[in-house]
Length: 61
Image 1 (cartoon, rainbow, N blue to C red):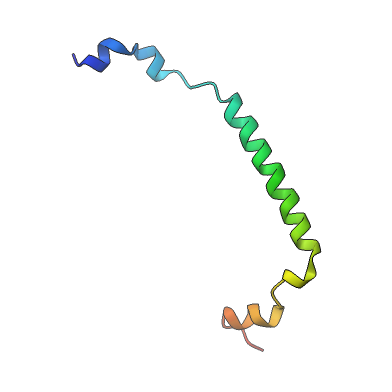
Image 2 (image 1 turned 120 degrees about the vertical axis):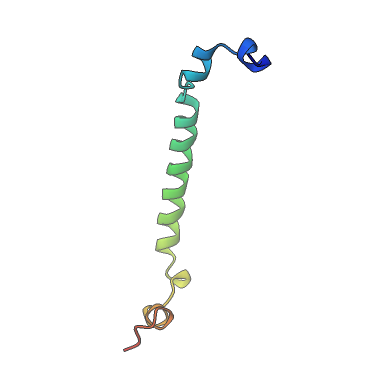
């Protein structure tokens, strides 16, 4: 038996960690991302012209 087996109970290794803090952090990140995207979409000067996108992907008309 290794030192780790004696120091950490197996149940602690098999039990899922409390993820409420992770979920709260993810929710905050997601909200910020959506708000930033909405703001960016309203600033038309930052959009890539459609003809450039078509050219980039090889779909020139």
